[in-house]
Figure 1: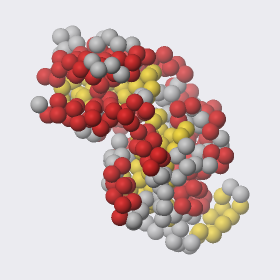
Figure 2: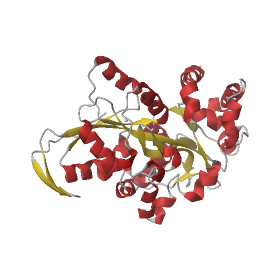
Figure 3: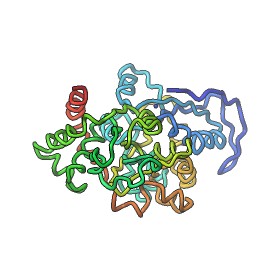
Figure 4: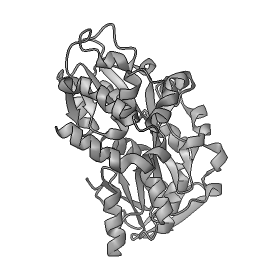
Length: 351
């Protein structure tokens, strides 16, 4: 996952860009909805501002927490106000099936075969490939955790555990801590006893958990020393380390889960032409290479990695040296099970 607007009108302007010059009228704009925080800051630098400079099209920013219901309420009211939004993959699958999103013309976006295989969808191009990681303060813990079982080990590493209040994140982690191999997670969850096993493992850690309902909240707990270890998103950890000059360590070799958010164009949005132009601008390898300078999430277009300095590329969850530790969330599984599992998880967490 995130509500503010970028203010300031762009008057009639002559803009020289790739392919020559053009005149953008004051009314041309695109309404873009993102996740706020460091995510939105990075997109402003790499996409929103360069796009405005090249095209003269005003970018109006909004923020949300990935709530698909906010879009469906607009659709039901017949007043769609968004043009582009960055949704998580289960919502992209749902929205594409329901006709809420425009199916993309991949020929105009560089080709679907030029993307990381799980980062391209009929209705979406990956906005970021994020990872759920185990992190800790390297100045406080010298011999850090090497597995999710270590995250559960409060005898060797005393202290509270920062956990993310989301079933989709904690269920897989619990099974890995219980000894299930990453490639077998969804086989186990397909059996009737699979979820029971995950919740039984979570029961063990529950007395030591401090829940975070946002990434920012979770990172603040780690920075303040309220927790010894935390479950969070890799770019949030690296961003907090850089911003606060702290030795925050990601335990990549513990195993991590990779998920994908996607830029989608909203069907019947108010500015379809401007929205399509922004997607084309984002699909450029140079735009994506610029994005990761300020946001340590993976990007979809393979050619973008050739433009990145090695230190930046090596810090991404999609870098080749981390492949052995990475597992990819099953979007199809969570589309089917998310509602029921979230209801059970929230009831369990509230007990």
